[in-house]
Each structure stands twice: as C-alpha cells, then as structure tokens.
Image (cartoon, rainbow, N blue to C red; front, side, top):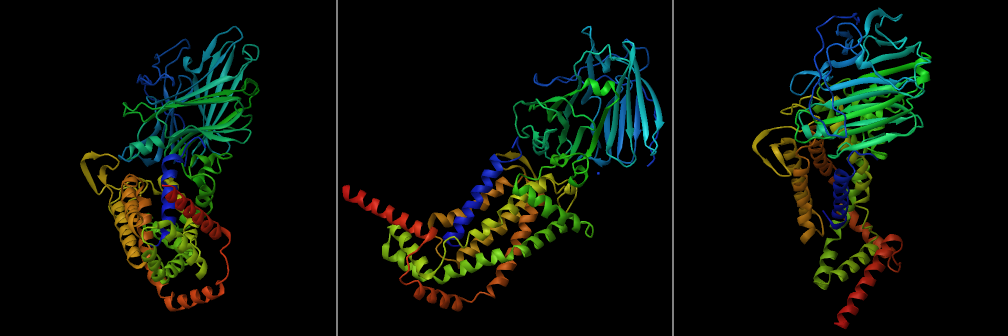
Length: 596
C-alpha cells in the first residue's frame, strides 16, 4: 500500500467515522369476520412517562353514556385489530405474520402501551372526549367484501359516527368520522386527535431498536421531516402548516394515520426516552388537528397503516410514505433505492438464503466496479516500479521530509504519474460503501433471517456471549466482525509487503483502522459485516487475477517514455500547485533555520 492509497484509505476512514457518528439518521403492501364480543376492557397502564409526553391514564369501566364496555376485533390475514366500545377507538394491533425476536406475538401496541383518543369543544366551552363515551357497535360488509365495524354515540343533540373498514390482505384500516346534527353545537375550531405510544422492545438490540424509533411526518406542502431518532433528550416539533400524514416508526414496523381528503390542519410531535425504564424503549406522542368542516360534512376520511416497514409496500400507501424506511440521505439513498434494493429483490426470487444473496450482491457490485479497482491496481504497479527512485530520494535527503516530498512530486511529474490516481477510483466507490451502512440495519427483508450462526442478519451475530461488558465493544463477540477484521488485516499486510513507500506512522495507521472498526462494527448488523468479509475475499481474488494482466516491464517502458516526453515540461494543474506549495514550505523552513 503506497502513500497515495494510504491517503485514500485515510480519507475513506475519516469520512466513514464522521458519517457514523455525526450523520446517522437525524432531523436532516381472507375472509374478514364480524365482531367478536369479549370481556370488559382492562384499565390502561399507569406507567410514569416524562413530563414532555402525556401519560396513559386509567379509565373507569362505565361513564355517563349507558352501556357495557366491550372489546371487538376485525381480522384479516395480516392484522388483528382490537377496538373498544369506550371511545369507539382502536386499542390494540397485532401483526399476524410476525413475531418479536423473543418469539412472542408481535403487538404493534395494545391497551397498556398506547392510547388513541379524539376530542372537540362545544360552543358553550365544554370539551367532549370520545373516551368518555360508550358507543353502540354494528358490523356490516362493504361492497368489495371488506368487514366494516361502525360505532355510534349520541351526544349534545346529535351523534358521533365512526366507521372502520378492514379490507382482506391489507395492512390498511380505513377510518371514516362524521359528526351528525352538531353543526350549531360545535365550536368553530378543529377536533384534536392524539396518539400516545409507549414503544416496547421487539428486536434483539435494544439500543438499535430505540435509535430507529421515531415520528415521521409529511406536510401538504411537500416537506417530509422527522424527530431525531438517536436523541436521549426530549424531542419536539410543531407543524404550523397542513399535515398529510404522520407515522410512529418502530424500527421495522409503522403505525401511521393518513388524511385522504383534506389534510390535517396542524400537528405536534414529541418523543422522550427514559433510560431507567427498560420496559419502554421510547415514548412517542402525536397530536393532529382535524378540520371541523370536514367531519361535519362527512368528508372526514382517513386511513391507518399498521404494518412492516417495507419500502415496496410503503411507496404505494401515500406520497413519501416510503421515507419511513431510512435508506440514507442524498446520493446514498439513491444508490439504495435504485441499485441495491432492485438487485436484492431480484435475487431473493431465486435464492432463499439471505446470506448467499448478500454474497452474490457483493460479487455483482465487485464486477461492476472492477474497472475502477483495476485503475487502483494499475497505479499501485506504477508506484512499485518507481520504488527504487523513491528509495534513492529518501537516502539522499535523509530526514528532510519536505525536500523528500518535493522531489517525489517532481519525480511523479517527470514519469507522468498522478499522486491521486490510486485513491480517486476508491473514492468513487464511496457512495456504495455508505449506502450499505444504511441498507443492512434498516432492511426488514433481513429481519430474523438466519445464516450460519447468526440468528438475525439485521442485528449483530452473537458467537460468544461475554459474562461482562467491555466499553466500546459490548458484551458479545461477533464472529462476522472478527472475520472481517482478520481478512482486512491480512489484506493490509499483503499490500504493505509488495507496495512502495509505506513507512513509519503511515504503516502503523494502515493496521490501526481495521482494529478500530473491530470495535465500531461489533454491534452492527451481521449482514453488513458478512458483506464486508465476502468483499475482502473477492478482493483477494481480484488482486490475483489483475496481477496476471499487469506487466512490470511494460509499465517501466511506458514510464521511461513519459520521462523523455516530459523532460522539459513543468508540472501543471493540481500536481503543479502541490509542488509549488511544497517549494514555498521548504523556503519558509529554510528562512526559519537561518533566523534561529
């Protein structure tokens, strides 16, 4: 590994570390039965939450409206949605085809962990909350065969009507809200919908589970935003303009509400973390305001989405709803969306093992980027051929590093060699490198997919569980990370044995970076570290094949021809500016020595 490649390695490593620590995710798609009576609903949780987020308060069994509180359900192949006649609202959602990492049924939320409610004010200043009313229920069937559950409650001389429709094989729940006969009773101000969600751990890695949990929203004006995922302090955002949708993203799953007609007139979102409470990884709270004219005129039409955080599914739900799948920002998102995901989904049609799919993905990427890596190998061969001349310069000028660098640049210019030709091709592959860091931890396709000893490729593999915690490393040994580190060190050693001017601190640095990433990546997704191990193995093969095409004798002849051609030519462009800067630095150093 020569100085130019080491420079490229340093730039890549520095950019990667900056990206990991400063640019991680931040604010920047059966027969449906009818109702099933059940026992009286249980009281909600009284678990304390931070002041910034309203707590889920307990409720009485009965209230001013006569009736018995019942739980009712709508079910299709994907969802089991539980409702309560108290408030006529959703109280629990189970994703039928998914389990938690611990093997339990995956409840997106339930009556103990979440609370949905709506309220409005009357002209005489009274506040009417849906949760204070016990609704009468009725089941029916839509024209397309979807199950419909309707809740009706008389109030203030009129009535509240809520209709929920669950189509077959869908993750969406249609919600129609209408206030009948209340035109003169309602205050002319929006209704308020609230959703408080105490999110519980469903994945192996609690920290990742927490850091991937947030609230995303999309404004009618076309702006998408989110709360800071990784913050451990209260986060809050208030939308002053109309809101098209809002979603609570639970790492790999989403609970969202979309406005189908007129958007919500406003919204407020906040999140909080109580690190001392391991039963709740984060508390999310959304408040949306519903235009009163819409619900009075029967245009209060909305949709809930309760389902997996899958890009191909979410992109058809609502504009920009697929933003709930974090694929990186800018160019990195583009690479994941239009390159990595299509190739990944194409391969999974034919291969059931996701470990093999990742290996084939690496192979395809390596083949496509081979012309760039070939340029790097070619530059490495030129530096190897020039090693005797560079060694002579070092021997001639000794400890005068400035003079050595100046004369080395002059040598490069004489032989027509660019000092950046080795690292530029590597930098051009950087978007793929960063794109992979976002793809593997966020791809639900890898969730709970096992490979070799790894139980879940979307989380770290545990080859050995340590009886203690090591700072910056963790309490487990990831074998894929060890394999990646060992292969990187071997590659570095091999490169240092055969290449040119890697000396002193630069040689030490080349071994230091793999060790740093051993700690950094120990708790990253196993799919990512497996990807990089396979990438290293294929790189070894590429190097061996490429060497058979690189003839040192021909390269030497080409460099000698360049030397004759450039004999009287002064270096220009970037190389010339570097040479001038080195010359100026040498002159300043000489002046400083004379003064001393």
